[in-house]
Image (cartoon, rainbow, N blue to C red; front, side, top):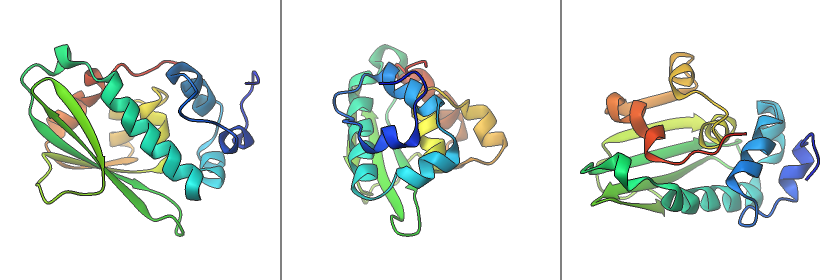
Length: 157
């Protein structure tokens, strides 16, 4: 990977092979506009699926304690791609991620654009600042939403 990542680097990226730190560095080098231009179609879906698989692996059960919660993620893409919905369920020291919305009522729902989602999960966005600037919309338990980042080993670029 080059020193200064470009939007074209997203298109050729094998998300399952790149380390979380390398992914964080790539996202850090891209603007929201660049992400929106490249993060579409099958590439977007592959990347989102891989990110949620990794959430399961990067989960910190010690930080979660006895937490039991369903978190719904609404990741808004282009008009052609629409909104992708994923859920992470935290229970008994485990985190499981699924694609799509279940019939269960989530404890918190987070809605954000592709670019903001990538910044958040790569450690390149401050969740509190993103909330204050209305880049993340939160429904439900705001306290849980505020503490979500401590539940995962989020990479640093």
